[in-house]
Amino acid sequence: MGPEKASALVCLASGAALALCLPRPGLTFLAWFLPALLLDRLLRAPSAKRGAFLGWLFGAAFCGTALHWIYLTCRYAGVFVPLAFSAWALLAAFLGLNWALFGLLARPLGALSPWMRPWAWAVLLAGVESLSARFGGPRLGPDVLAYTQWRHPILLQGLAWGGPHALSFLILLVNGVLLGLWRRDRGAVPNAAAAALLLGLWTAHGASVLAGRSEAFGSAGAPIEILQANIDQYEKWDERYEEKIRGAFDALLSRPRSVKPSLVLWPESALPGWLDDPKNSRWVSGWARRLGAAMLVGSVARLGERTHNSAVLFDERGEPSGLYNKRRLVPFGEFVPWREKLEPFIGILSQMGDFHPGQERQPFISTPAGPLAVTICYEQVFPRLVLGDAARGARMFANLTNDGWYKDTWGPYQHFWVNVFRAAETRSTLLRAANTGISGVIDPYGIVLAKTGLMRAERLDARLPLVDPFPGGSFYARRGDWAGALCLLCAALFLLAAKDNRRKIS
Image (tube, rainbow, N blue to C red; front, side):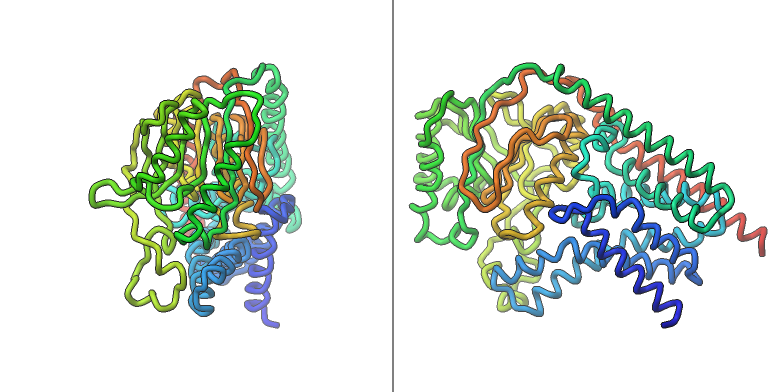
């Protein structure tokens, strides 16, 4: 096997293996050395163009393996096999472009002094991530290296200062240093000491914050309930199952309780039909009055000539008193691109209507438990949405979702655990109501206080923390993605230095 084929194979294999860091496999330690294999191959690449290709292979393999459930979801929905495969492959290829850009620019950085390379690579990756987050595109998890550390609360505490891209910087720095030690590069030992010091400080900060957690919380506060009715996705829009759906929620709401809730969360598109159907609105309103509790309900709604995927608050008197319209819509879930051409091939997805996005800035919903910022479904994997709401003063978030499309794949686990990042980054309490799971309550430290199982009908009875340990929110929420912007600037300076070095050599 030639060196070019060997490099391609190494990048494919290491990228695919990196996906095992994410839920459910959760082999998070792999992230601390697998990207080093990509860095090694980038140093051997004959050109920046070849570096871009190797980076893309690594990223596409990473994202494709992590998101294999996209193909399964399409097949569950009856999508034609070639189209289901194409949807998965094209998404993996698109998300791999982040890594292609990294590879394109990382290869020229090889002209730097060996002791500078790990730092240059680290700021470059964090800068590319930050740039991608600023300018849109699908956000499904694997585009941020920090998500590989989802199961380590001690590492998540630093997010409140620097956000996810700061942790990505640290992870890639360690990889670059390990490569330098393996290659016996000049300055590798001092670099290793510096990286160890940074990682130690990051971890010590996390340990210090978590050590004060129990004292900050005190006793429990407002009681809440989260409904997880476990409605089969392929029954939700079939009018034959309307009464079955209502019965599932009625059963959860009728269960005994030791204390009256102040707020009840229903999942995304919980109602068997439209919100403006009097039968649906009367049903929810009746439960709000019966329990004397506010109900935050996910539903599709018509507002004039526009249709929205919405969250509506019914107050304790049963009156609608708050509304949120989803801002980031899911292709083939909430709108169908090229509908006329694709309709014969996409099964049940062809039955979905085209929804309209809500305004970027929407008022918070006032509840008995406090003001609430809302996201619906995969909006929670757009860091800038939550960050923007936190910057406006949001201290509590509700994420209403329906992960029933994905059944028991990696998808629901990835979607749940990304919420710990949003909570820790903004130092906010996060409530999640999911149709089939996973529902839960996450505190401002990114600690899961309570959660349900997957594919089970459950009512989660919980209490919010009485004391807000971070009333001012986080530095990251107040200052924005300063770490990503700083990394972009430093990456530009490193690239200029590398260009100057190449000019001197030539």
